[in-house]
Length: 136
Image (tube, rainbow, N blue to C red):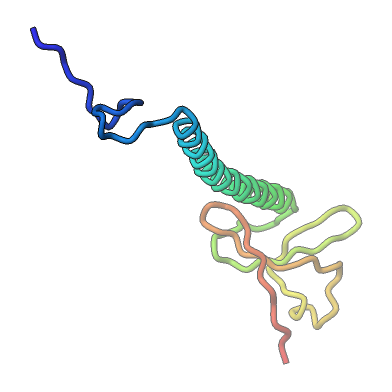
């Protein structure tokens, strides 16, 4: 049975008298350089992941804020069936908030209660605030 030969480029010493000597100091410097290079590379990758996590956290917070607003809007009193795409208007009075189909301009610019905003309900039952342009 023949012994398997180790490739000469992986040896820590020269394989012939003509090969350059490999000193332990040179080997240690090579290892140190490789270690620094790997650390920098890993640090860069981890920094990218940390930034992605921060962005995802911010996005999750925005989604939760919007969900809270949507839930509060659904709690407003409403005497009609809200339909997706329909513009509805939120007013506030002493006893709480309510939705109306009448815009502030429909009241002759003098609505009976404090106007809080206009919305459309999306098919997923979330709300999108819309900004009305005053009628001339």
